[in-house]
Amino acid sequence: MRLHHVQVACPPGGEDVARRFYADGLGMTEVDKPADLVARGGCWFRAYDRTGAVTAEVHVGVEDPFSPARKAHPALVVDDLDAIAERLRGVGAEVDESQRTTFPGHVRFHTFDGHGNRVEVLSPLSPGI
Image (tube, rainbow, N blue to C red):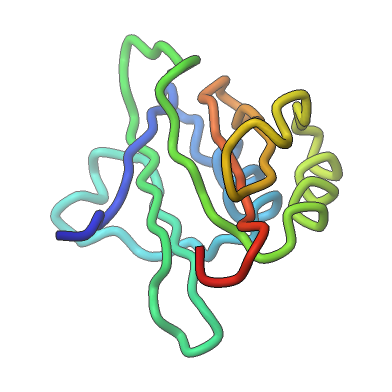
């Protein structure tokens, strides 16, 4: 078994705010939604490894009424935690490093996308974790 994607929500018309966070901040690539799903709104993002294999996928779906996920969250593993933190700060996202060393085998931070959904970003202390 493997995880295909995680979905977070945004309010109607919130796609550009999501793009700023997931594409500009996290460095994910926006991908086209299937034609049958475009009318629902939202946007999809993928991350790839050096070989071009998909390593993470986040679907941002429109929800009305909207309520952000303040506790539930995706956790994304990255190679350069500090570089991602700086990119996120550069797009105006708050980066909370208060729990940086509290997850065994990793360093991490928490942030919130532009709609208030919690996101965890972590990096292994040793390769292959």
